[in-house]
Length: 98
Ligand SMILES: [Zn+2]
Ligand SMILES: [Zn+2]
Image (spheres, rainbow, N blue to C red):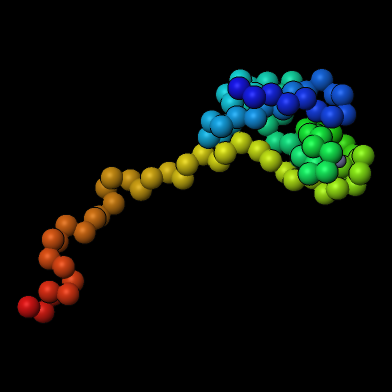
């Protein structure tokens, strides 16, 4: 999986996961893995969520560019339960009267 390091030099690595909900390894070890991070469009630096929180600002410390917050792909919305009533009529509505 692609991994980024935090530009402040902190020991956390940033997991860039395409897995919905984030990489399970990163999720289990938040001390060493960040899944939410900010990216600076100007200098392309990445900052983990904790360092952003610590700095108290969502701007890049180097050039004050507002960071773009990125994170794991959200889990897919739960699908409707199968018990959900579905339209069983095969008759098109426009033929309702005839
Ligand atoms: Zn920057
Ligand atoms: Zn950091």
